[in-house]
Image 1 (cartoon, rainbow, N blue to C red):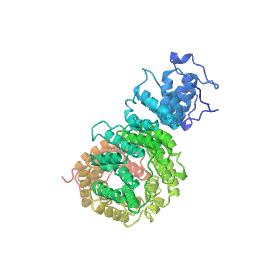
Image 2: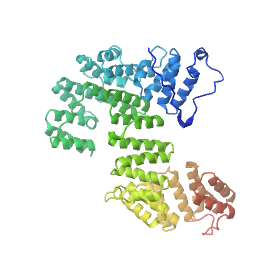
Image 3: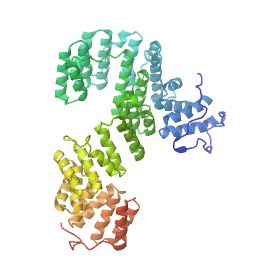
Image 4: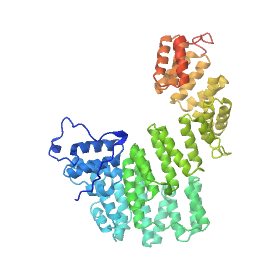
Length: 572
């Protein structure tokens, strides 16, 4: 195996970390006899840096260091496995294919992934016979048996073995894996020109449990290609009546009814990519997001397109590989149209996960600049500006024509209410929340917010308490709603009840400064001044805003006025 060309300099690690690591206290013996590279770095040091980068989500950087180490020590199995895994996640499938691990000691999760990568890489290079040789006699095994099973008929057809490619599917009729295999068989039958058997397979799929929702589009496109547009329209209508409005079905129906050109039948190569995407979808639903990302990487290698690349990034993000996800999103450029916008949104959501609001805002600004007529982007951008306390800018969007429409969603009103509240415009906040409540009368967040405004402002304390109590019944585990309910009881003078409720809220959100402050107030009113002082001091450690800090410092100095009800127990 020839070594890949190395760059002159390894890329820096995130956050400015140096590549120079102190030598470990005890280097494993297997590494001791290995030489250093031209810059004096040991294989073990390169391995540690690469593994650190990969662990922190920098799969591409990690793979680069691990490759360097692997070139110096190609026979160390641990290094080979780590380099293979990082290359796979990072998207360097060509290198991963050269490293595909073999042997009895290799875990099946890597050995079978290696075989799957090898087969797909042969297809990428146009060598269907070599790809078929990988899977013909020994199927891809667990845990990658599903994608192996899905792609094998396409590989067989590509290699000319149509008998195997079109073999009837064995398996339980309503098993989801069997259903996808049968849809792939229908596709191959159409490619082969056996339209009668292809239609019979599609009809069996549509009649199966869940099959109508999954395979109507594929069957409808088949009918359109056969010139049977009326049958396709009828199929789309029946499915929509059963599953509800679906934009894809609506678009397909409009195309068929308008005698538009039907979608072209995907080629064998495209069908193989589709099979991998189906396996990725199932893995993602099952929570195996890293597997999903790998299968999507393979699909992208066969048929590069921005939608698949976007889905790779989403799978990585769902697997908590945020940096690798953002690196993937960054590869989707403005020429990708809506996929560029979605990539910027997904990158922003990833930054939000890491509490990097300014970076999230920058991505949303890019998305909005690319499509300034997109109401979803406007909504997300307004929300991000609100998180950064840039309320006037956020309100300009929320009151603008994209969001302030006759049929606006309740969530827009909820956002606008929060902005009005932050700007001290309570009448307008109340009006927006009331309108939102008419649209969603049982939404606990709307009930809680409107109720809290009424209670905290003293406008309608008892009515607000009723709304909050309804919210608590709907979502009893929500600490913020429990805080509102406790504060409502406090405002009603029912201090003992307030203490019990607020103690539960603090247990649920121990780092919430407002809830701790409310509990301190309730303690004070029932005569538990020492505990009140403890809670207020705790508030100061929780990074309260300036207004709350000033109020708490005043209470620590002077305490609270006597209970307005004149009773520490309040009403029962």
